[in-house]
Structures are given as C-alpha cells and as structure tokens.
Amino acid sequence: MRYRVLDRTLPGVVPGTDDSAVWLKGSAGIYHQPPRFVLPLPGLDMLPLKYGLLQAYQTSLGTEVPLQNHFQISAEGFFNYMDPTVFDLAVNDTSVINVPHATLVPTEVGNSLEDFQKIIQRLTQPETGRAYGLEFLLRRQSRNGLFGWVSYTISRSERLQQGRWVPYDFDRTQLLNLVAGLPLPRNWDVGLRAQCQSGRPTTTTTGYNAGRNDGYWRFDVRVDKRALWKKWLLDLYVDITSVALMPEEIQPGTVIRYVLPTVGLRGRL
Image (cartoon, rainbow, N blue to C red):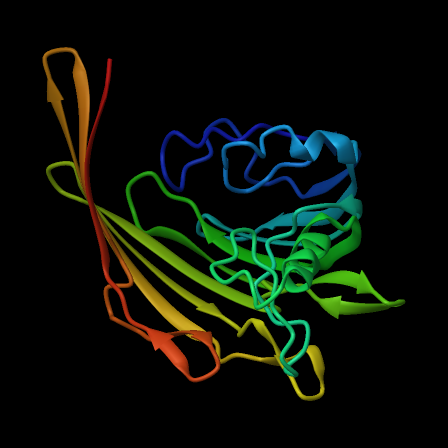
C-alpha cells in the first residue's frame, strides 16, 4: 500500500507529493490506554487504575483522487469499536421522569445517598461503544492563490445499553466544514471557516436520547501577518470564533450566543 507523510507547516501546501497519483489509504489497529478521568480532581487520580485498560479497535479505508487546477477529492469510511470504555462524559438525563442525570462533576448531588450512588454507578460502569461513518473532502492546494476545502461527515457515535445501541450524548450525525484562505500582498493572510453541525441527542418521553436539539451554524475569521525580525520569523494573528453571533442550542429551549476573540504572536528561529 502506498502512503505519504504530509508537511503541514504551510497552510494548503503539500510539498513533494505526486499530484497525478490516485491514493488508496487504509488503517487498522488495536489500541489500549488507562481510563482517564476528564477533570484532574484531587483524590481521584488513582481511581481509574482499578478498571484496567480501555480497548479500542479502529479501522478506516478511503481513496484520494487528483483533479485539475490543484483540486483533490477524497472519500473515507471508518469504524471504531470500544470495549470497554469508562468515564464517558454524560450530561443527558436517563429519563424525563425525575431521574438524576450523570455528569463527571455533578453540581447537584440529589436528595439522597441513593441518588448519588446512581450517578457514580453510571460514571464508573464499563460500557461498549462504537463510532462509524463516511467523510468526503474536496480540497484545493496552492502556494500563492486561493486554498481551502469543503468537507462533509455523516457518522454515528453510540453506546450499548440494555441490549440496544443508543446515540451517545455528544453525537453529531452530520458535520459540514467550509474553509478558505487567501494570501495577500506584504505577507498578509486572511481565512474564513463556516461550520454546520446537526443537533445533539436529548432525552424525551419516548426514551433516552430519542430526540435531537436544533443544529447550528458557526462562522470564524482569522487574519495573519508574517514578518522577519533579525533571525526570527514572527507570526501575528487575530482569530475570532463565532463572529456572526449565531445561536447554539445547549438544551431544548436554551440557546447561547458568544464571540471568542484570540490574539497571538508566534516566533520561530
């Protein structure tokens, strides 16, 4: 099987590759790691060790086809199987009938010790999970012109509960990304990203994670300026996340609007 290593030091550029080749890409592996508590809480550092190693089988198969005018198109399928997985980040209620939900750091313990024990039991119960889907990517690479890509992913992330597969709390079935960048004179770069995600699962009267929240759009803008100072290559950037103040539904009927600006300076010798 042919393979290659991509140099990602320059955005949109893959130097040293054969632009006329059709690539077949595949992977398969078995991976192990100790369980990790998401938040490093004092006194709980050693807790995950008693559950043994987590295990995951990960596979993928795809192809990449070159097109004209520096365009490439690729398609890839993947399947991951996790058995066991522990300390899954869980935020949804298991039932709408007054059953406490499980979180990694519960803000409300509940009305009794029994409620607290249910939360701990759900967090520490080894589970079986799987994730599978397809990803399509159309990309344009260029050193001195417009570059970017459009990607679309359709996938499912699920957990096995009571003999049936149910969506994971943070499953996003559809994901669309549009990224574009343009080098400008005097070492300026400007970039734009638009992202559309389908809604997360939510518990309804029909059952656990039987419904979906609304999806949302997000628009980000980034501006870079590169300069030489003595032997240093300086990169000043301004990155604005969610510049359009689009609403994101975090639970049914509750939305948030936010803008996250980031200013940074990076230097390399």
